[in-house]
Length: 69
Image (cartoon, rainbow, N blue to C red):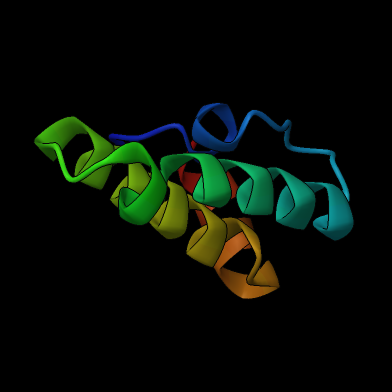
């Protein structure tokens, strides 16, 4: 496992789906390229946030991710 999705979103493994969604929304707003700029670091962070949410918001993908950890 190369990225810690929980760390990226600032949540832990036992947080509810609503907590994960709320953390995602706050970070996505903060790091959106239209707001934070179009630098390479901003685009990478925004991509990582979306990738983390895509995995942790899907119960099947989250279970698989947790098993790999």
